Length: 329
Image (cartoon, rainbow, N blue to C red; front, side, top):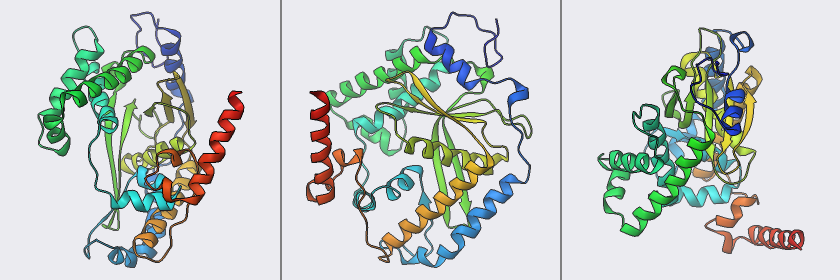
């Protein structure tokens, strides 16, 4: 029996794994074609949209003249949400913590699972992933080498949970599917704007101008509309990089064993260009003092670093608590 990705299935799959094959696979004739000029049109649209902002780059507080501006999906999501939260978090130095590190370690464990020749034991994969990342010379390696035994135990436990859920919900990733974890994507505009990111999982490849790749973001917790924006950003970068966009975008919620999927179209990619331009303009105006930060309430208010000093946020949290209590009774 051949599965939906066109590869011989040698083991019985559970319903969740069968759903993954059904959502990610498609016969060749159902995969869309894209014009070869699309990558140039997308690049030009970004260049035209960002060119008026070049003079603002050297007005940024704390940056040296000539420094590039790095734009990530996280920064875009933050500045297009609550600008005040964005400004506060930008000023805070980044430091590794267990909730942040577990995603990176989990991705490494999943990568190892693709070529693992022994039984797929999640904890063994996690330990190997931690050992590999701990051997490096980057900040994560430094952190792994100095954390307490309590932090190490917490990291192993929470990461094992993620990897176990992935192995339960996804069919084994066969090398013939061209799987890649934490795929790096990067586009430079005017040699000053650097759009970059890492997609959790990429499966499949393009066949000439026919789309075949699926980009997957792995999430825990509840669904959110901005998760789609994250994948659209990756799709834009990949479309410019190789010319043929991904075929489909899929956010997979490990806690729920469910997908949120979207097919890639030209309209989707150009709307993402407009979102990038809008986000970069807000970032530059905020960092150069040409705009006062606005507030926007939402679920992120629960863990916002300024929630105790934000009247809008306190009102939102109070109303949210009242609604939750009322629904519970």
